[in-house]
Image 1 (cartoon, rainbow, N blue to C red):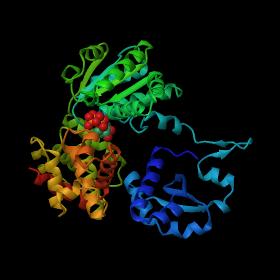
Image 2 (tube, helix red, strand yellow; image 1 turned 180 degrees about the vertical axis):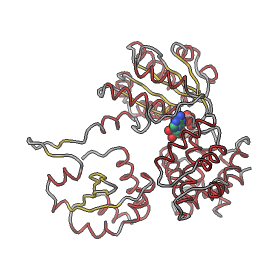
Image 3 (cartoon, helix red, strand yellow; image 1 turned 135 degrees about the vertical axis):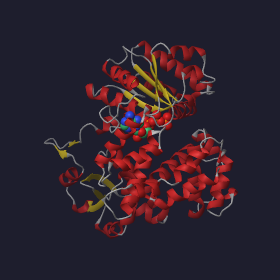
Image 4 (cartoon, rainbow, N blue to C red; image 1 turned 120 degrees about the vertical axis):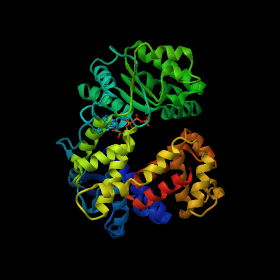
Length: 457
Ligand SMILES: Nc1ncnc2c1ncn2[C@@H]1O[C@H](COP(=O)(O)OP(=O)(O)OP(=O)(O)O)[C@@H](O)[C@H]1O
């Protein structure tokens, strides 16, 4: 029974939602005992132990629908199977696997490999739109994936937020894995690298850490500006870098600035970065933005004419993530208006909040400002936001505030956790992902967040 990345996310989300909404005893009995076998044709196959568990699961449509929209952006139905009445062959079939003659389960191909690597299979060179601002970096990325470790090592990509650095890293990983599925590939954010290192030292597992990182054929390390000032991690990274470089493993690094501008990064490391190629991505021109929007429109159920796409492209000019967000927002508002074609009026309405957003981009906003603004909006106190109460009317605004802090400040996840009364960084990451995903399908939440942002002016 092997789930792919999205299936796993979907199932984790169901469990999280269930934990929030169902009493602990019922959760343990009904939810923990169930398994997701697979999702086929938008239908989730859920395996429960006995027929007694079935009625409970039948009443959980809301959980499944919410998780479906959050993770897949689509309606996911579900079918329930009681293990006591389902044969091993049926279970294998429902898992998308088959049982071979020797009785071994044959797993779905490929997916597990990518899971360990951290590589997202939907970020490829094929769906990366080439434009003036990224063409050299795209060329370098393709060359690095074609001759890993040989041509541009390390490849150092820098540029502003949301311009496709991470996308290109995954594309390199996908390409290398396609050529050699056994290649040892790892994509990590620098935050994860730091956390892995800290955990390894804490739990006396440095051997494992070293073995994992130094045996790689391809290391993709994202957002290394996060390393600044972290001495222990930097030393370890220095050794990892040297070990990989010496055995001609490809190293790809990204940052929001040039290596020389990375404060507190030792000279010996910065000079190593320049052994390979340093290349930048600059904001997309109008044609590139239109091409990206046209690709998105092609996949949408909603019809977008060129004028509407042109309008969206005119609103967002410096961040492709925001451009995609604007598109999703217009698509969502069109759908909820009950029409099948987007138009400029709808787009204007959907993107109203963006003006407020760009106005605050120039002002320095502190975590405290955000906590106060969110508290005011939801009519609770700032102390409650940074406190420990788990009541929904407090926990949800807290998650909104964590999301905004990650969006609007430079604070790292652990720092945000600390500023929210000593929460773990995983709690912050969870809150951020949750709110980000909810915003794609919840117009009211989008509105609330836009209002809070404009109050931060
Ligand atoms: N040229 C492009 N063609 C298609 N999609 C793109 C392109 N550039 C960026 N994107 C999309 O924009 C979104 C943001 O890109 P990505 O996460 O790679 O940015 P980033 O530069 O790593 O940002 P950050 O520094 O904030 O992490 C992704 O969904 C990515 O697929």
